[in-house]
Amino acid sequence: MAARLGNDQVTVLACGADFKSAMPPDCKPGGCGFDSHPGLLSRHRAVLDIAPAVDDSSATQRSSRVLVSGRVRERAISNASPGGGCGRRTVLRLVLGVGLGLPVARRALAQPVDPRRQRPQPNDRFVFAGGERKRELVMLIDLPSAGPPVTVYPIDPVTKVVRDDSRLNQVLLVRLDPGALNGDTSARSADGIVGYSAVCTHTGCDAWEWQPASTTVKCPCHFSEFDLRNSARVLNGPAPRRLPALPLKIVDGMPAVAAGFIGRPGFESGGG
Image (cartoon, rainbow, N blue to C red; front, top):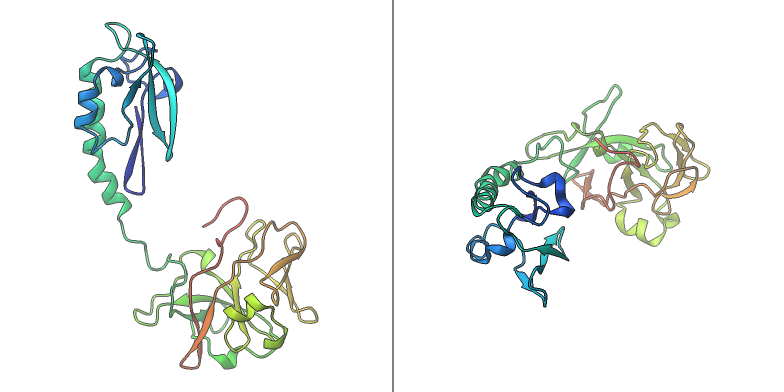
């Protein structure tokens, strides 16, 4: 028996020949006897997300429908018999074990996210990520027309918490000619300022070379190039996808977050 939590739901895999690694010690090939105890299953259906067994024409086989990752899989399992499956006590132990584990697991899932690791939130402002002005607020005057881009972190304007505990929260801000932006980029911009994830989607580098003639940025690690006027689409290099865009607005003379990232910040082999 193995249990997995997802969306406040427990998915149960009945032990048997298909799931030998999940078998309790007294299970034998042929099933755990779930199909031999329909009353037990029905009494615990609030805990176990498992469909009832369905008889077929064979007296020695049944078709068990088990929900696995949201899909119903149907397989034949042998009727439990003395010496051919788990006993009622084993089934009860498994059911009660899963049920007792639910409150702990749900509490773990409900733990609040550290605000320093949260992705940019609507109304967040920005602070410089490094340099002499590190952690100072970014004003419109700090973003001259035609660049260069500035690397920043979002900051909660109320709590003053800087979301710098995940480097995937780094954002590139640059002011471009509003008339040169394509439709989607223009809709997400504010006064010509556009925002993108500052982490390359190839291997996660976060240093950039600004190319003002083409209004593109190049990652110096493996030379991927992104067109900032056109939703940061990939022009050259091995990056598998464009940089996620961050919709912006202007609040009190400062660029601010209008909505969360469009696309997942991160790169091919992981995140942080």
